Image (cartoon, rainbow, N blue to C red):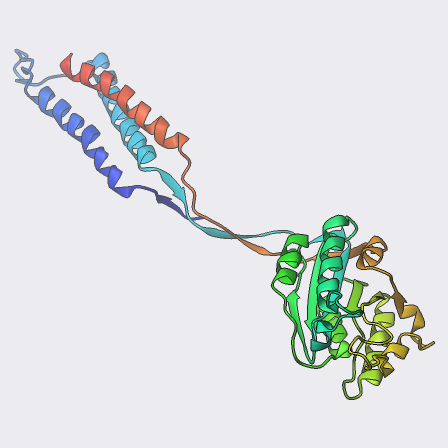
Length: 320
């Protein structure tokens, strides 16, 4: 760890003890020299034991004052990088796969709120009112998919971050590709090595993408292989309200396929899915953390007090 001075220019205070030392030496030289009448020794001053202790005390005071100046300048630990230890964590991680395609603008009944508005309202209420899901992932999909909230081990995403993204979400005029959204969620779950994540699909299931049925079946097989469960909240209707357009699609029947039936479950609300969320155990790898430079205050205060206290005995020593 690098040690520097927070205020290097304060080292100029070292002039004070050094100046006092010069004053002391000058004062000692100006004192009358003890003369000895002897054939061999003339004009020689012999230091007594008390004089030697006095010199030693002066040197000690100077060293103490220089140390006090160093404290006043302020020791500062330089910025450094430390590594945290790898650890195991347990948390329930819920990936929301949200359909924001253009068909969400339809209402299921005359004058009713759109499917998109209903989905957002019920989903946000479920997030705010639940305690089962501790961490979140959020995938928005229409003709393609985008990870709006992508948690990583050691960097979880909470409810507030997810709600903020939902508030900013709008519908997309593109088509609907459920398989693309689910594939993105599975990718994010596997990247974080979270284990069997909880998945919630919120969609009107109006998927007419090319090869959508077989591709969705493939993703459901991946969910089953992961040991997870896809909760499906269908906000569509057997007959979409525009007077004549019916909405059942081949993808609707995929969820009933016997080969992957145990990989999905229809729910009546997002809250029902969150209530059944399971806890996962996953590894949080060692991470590097930047430690900023810091300057503790107490050494600077101690240095200032010590400097003032040492000046008093030094000046007394000079005057004696």
